[in-house]
Image (cartoon, rainbow, N blue to C red; front, top):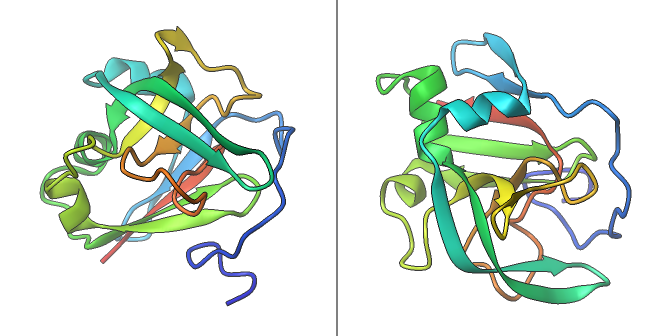
Length: 158
């Protein structure tokens, strides 16, 4: 499905941030949207996940790294509430690349670690060039279809 960020095809790597604006949008199931500043993530519970890899189309695999940030589930609970009715979350990059994650994946994380909205890399803050806020899927080690660099939008779907 060409052009569908949730069912992405292999794409050319983006070495530069698609925009200077690091904020992203959280779209709630009821249609409301909230603009999220990256520093807000630092107010939420911190989780570090070691042995993560970055797989980039055209650049191969790098790592292992320790990524740190807030779990995607904790982020959703903190901003949408535990009672929000959603079954899937879409995370879309500011460059239009994205992925879909089912609620069950977040409720029952893979042994490799929980899915993160990461803002640290090996204990230091990530730069805008590195993503600043990046979706990390710890069990992904061989393709680049679930990692989302430069998070631009998070949609909670009923």
